[in-house]
Image (tube, rainbow, N blue to C red; front, side, top):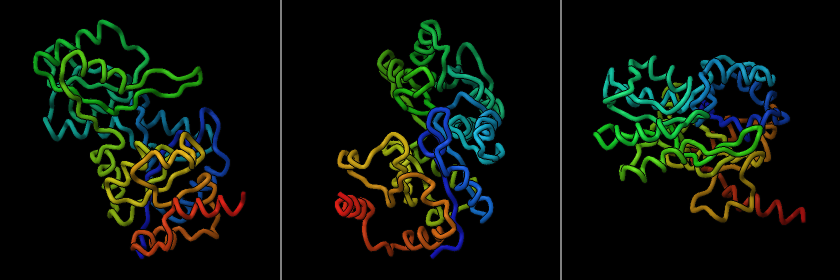
Length: 287
């Protein structure tokens, strides 16, 4: 059993839903802080800076600093700075992505970039897509902060980064490199930022395609929260399973739940029953 245990936590669908805090999420985070479990909030939204994300959480009652935020914009900027230090980028995106690139030594240009970088944004224009297409055909490499096809907003669903990337891939015949969840690039970088080993890392998310698959690829413990976009009946559609299933993070908030024992034993391979089978038995017993 590992003595150290840290958490990589999705936000929308796990901590809040829309603009509403999920009941018990604040108690769970307070517990992690009180018991000195390192944690990061992971987001595939590149629009906001870390400070902006932390402020949004604070207004919901989750008192954390920007050091607890890890965005796909940060992962993308760090990745590019290693691939080509002090490079240049043409950006389709907003403040969070622009700031992350600047902080990692990149210059934002309107012509002859090393990379075309696509993030979330509400200001995509036909002109920007046309310019990006020409740059990619001229040799710029296409990089996506994530490939989520859409994203929820207060007014409904809008096209996401993945939709813009698909447009550019179709127009140019070039395939984008994606750095956000479930990419191992982001999942590994977040773990390393916390100073954790693989066996000490737990991913909590509500989306099978990103959070859970990203954790499975890396060998982390994975926890599916049914408080967001995935329901139990959806699991039959996937060739992989989470290690644990919870109704919400409120299930992990009580001190009666020994987190080190629960996830330490799982990491050591001592689980007696797969999570999906366990949940199926529980459901049958209550129907």
